[in-house]
Image (cartoon, rainbow, N blue to C red):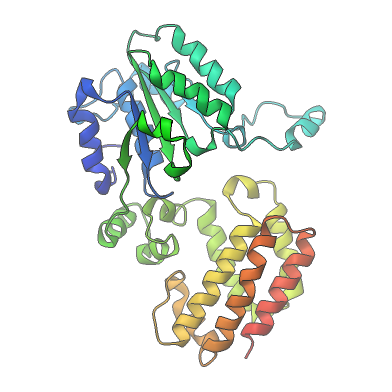
Length: 352
Ligand SMILES: [Zn+2]
C-alpha cells in the first residue's frame, strides 16, 4: 500500500508515528471502533518500522528482504500475538483423518500466558539485524489476566529496540496499569464523504450503501465490497426479497447448510450475524414505510419499500419480536429449528 491508497483519515496518526522518528513511544495503544482502520494501521506501521528501505513518509518498500519476510508472515523480529482461534491455519498441515479430532477442538479466544512467555523469551535474544523489534497484540482485550500481568513486566522494562502495538476495540477492558504504560492513540471514525470516496476508489459500486451497512466504519464496509461477506450480504437480501412468495421452512434448510458450509466460519458468517441482518432488514423496511431513507440496505431500497409499503407498524412489531432472539442466536440448541422459528415469524410478521 502506497501513500496514495492509505486511508486519508489515518494520515495525521501516520505522520505522528514517523515525525517522531526515533522517539516513537515504546508502547502504543491503538484504540477505536472495529472497522476504523487501526488493524490495518498497525500492520503498516509494523512493516514500515521493520523495512530496510522505507520511503520518506515511512511506508514500507514492499520488496526488500525484510518486506518479503513480513509478507510471508515469518519476519523474525515481528511477534504477532492473537488468540489461537484467529491464527492463520496452514492448509497444508494436518490434512487427513487422523487430525480431524484435533481440528474440531475449539481453539481459545484468549491470548494466553504461554504465548506471552514465548514472545518474552525471543525478546531476550537480540534482534535479527540489530534493528527494531515489533510486538503486535491484537486484540489486546483478548489477553487473559495472567498474560496481561506478564505483559506488564515487559512494558515496565522494555527492551530498548522493541515497540509494542496494542490494538483494542475496548480499551476500558484493559488493566489500568497497562493503559497507563502505553501512549493512547484514538482512531477516529471518518467523515462519511471521506469514507465513501475511499471506498469508491477501492471498487465499491454503492459506497453509501455499504458504509451505512457498516455503521460508518470504512474498513468494516470494505468487507461488504470485496470478499465473501459481500456475496453473503447480497444473497441474504435476495433471499429476503423472495421470502414473501417463498417457503420459510425451505429457506431455513438452505440457511442451515449455508451456516454449516466448510468456509462459513472463516468468512465470519454466523447465526448471530444473520439475526442482526434480519433486524436491519426489518428496521429499514419500517423506515421506508414511514417515508425515511434506508440505513443498511440502501442498494435494495426500492424493492424493500415495495414490500413494506403501508405496513410499517407490523414491521416494527416484528423487529421488536426479534430482539428476544438475539441472545439465543449465540447458542441455539438446534440451529434448524431456531431458523425455522425465526423465519416463520418474519414471514408472518411482514406478510401482506
Ligand atoms: Zn521493505
